[in-house]
Image (cartoon, rainbow, N blue to C red; front, side, top):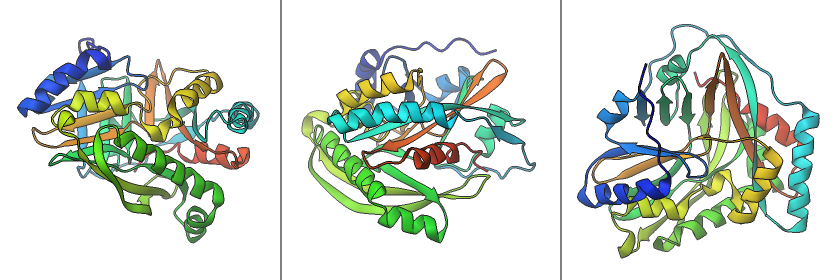
Length: 323
């Protein structure tokens, strides 16, 4: 048994992160969706608490086939939430809303099995509580320049899926909106801002067939007052725009009403500072242990032109084991 993890709020931990960043002291961290629970410390401290990070590392291939079944929310229940979001979009309360839901899953893979074998850029395991295998970078900081890689738009990794992401008006609008939001977010801590690469496709491995995800690259030079201030930067940028929507404040109110559950650490962020550079990720592709049951949390972006059946299918498509 590991000791309890001493969580504090993002506000409380940000000053310590600023100090470590300014002094070049390495640390790792993770923060929940609404910033009320955060942990930061050395990798040794993390290990002693049963917290494991693996960023940009190759994972061993699974030597056995694991069972997997999912029991998603009914379409009728999802459609009710979708209609709540659509009403807000038509009122003009938001342009883009990331709507998520919980899916109970049944698998003989343990959380540690999933962590060890997941083929993902960013992985986190927290005791016997949850595991994350995220494909999405939040921000990177290298040589006083900040980079973000918003990921919005999902389809099967087929020729038809490629055409969908490149030509569907809903997918185009969703991605353009999130790029604008991230540009605006980064402009609070960096100047000038530029879009270095727009709408490229990345392939994500799943046990049910691979997926395309559409991404862009946005960057800017950190303003002098934010250089080394990792905690202040995160306080300014969170929550991540790709898992809320635009504009953030009113969109988050819509999310709270429609979802009617606690996201917890799902859609928070996790990161590593090596003494010079910062790498961080959005905590999507998330499995939580709840008693004897496992819960997979997933979602997708909703625009005014979205169709409930398509978005429901995407939510289910994102529930998978990453081997």
